Image (cartoon, rainbow, N blue to C red; front, side):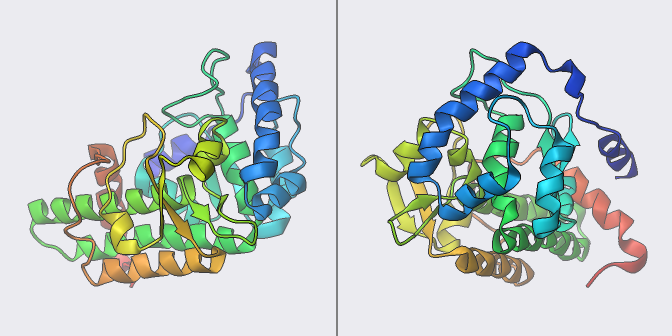
Length: 294
């Protein structure tokens, strides 16, 4: 884990390497999303956009973003160059750091990108981090990763330890997907979007709220953690939470279920859990052995 952390901590946003085309891509993405946010995004996201003073005409510098963000909730955007192992990602959330991709999508791929880019992370995720209740939910979710380490560290059989951890990680990934990435919320003006995957998607943000092809159900934890999903098409099933207080309570309930063993045998299916993510949790457990948190 030390090597991984050293590598991440050395990453900086290479702002001088962004081309005129890169900045033009940001400008196009921002300009077409802005009216969609006004129509479909929850009011706290819209307030967050205003608080961050994001430039509409160029890629923002992360130090600029953090200058507005950190005084509000203590969160900061942390530059990363690519994929971050799951435990490291969640541990960053626990420490009020959000791993932020510094690359931007190509101009001919505005509508769909299978992996995050700086527009998804900064314009989709970070405005929600200006809200104290949402920020506390992310921290609580980061705590769940440490709870998962504690739970599986008590399993002596290595094969069973990996199997249990894989089930827990699948449940965590599904919860994150159906809330932080693709969550809907009730409001006085009807259902609004708070999930970043929707907030950064020009087509899907409207589709998620208005399309008759989307099933929208009140969030129930047992449904979400057992529901498979695929990332390469518009989501046919979404969950609606009542409020940000409700969302925070769900993160706490997820952790309690983890401690009670209710995540040890979730339904199989997508998403897959890769070896790098499993290894990141197992290595965190080994590092914590001398004085493991309880």
